[in-house]
Length: 173
Image (cartoon, rainbow, N blue to C red; front, side, top):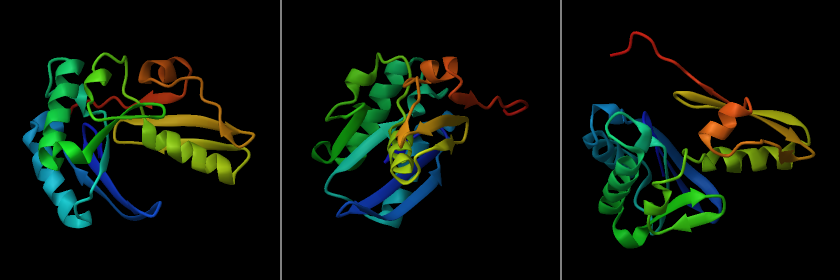
């Protein structure tokens, strides 16, 4: 399950195969109650699972004064909705934790879904350009010799290396 600032994304996997997926509008800048609404809509579409791996970038939205407040707040909501024993948080490469608190001081949000998709692309194409377009950002990553060759991991690093583009919205209130 992924909680971003504009959409909640959820996928159900069984035996290593994605069998259902859903993306639901979740404008967190309108308030965190949007997450409850989107969660229940996702649950109705794909059902409950015995274990949920959670990613998030919504901690950076305007609903929170600081990144740390956002990480802690969103994590608490997800644990409340899923129950503590059924939620693990992606906190960086090859890391799943039962708490997202360790992420609160990271400089930028990791993109695990893009990372996995890049690896999948590399398994199928020795040379490619991987483009991951989200609601507000676009990742542009080269695949060479069957592997992603991105230089950055965090948003800031990806911006520095030209691997991330951020949409600037004007006239939106």
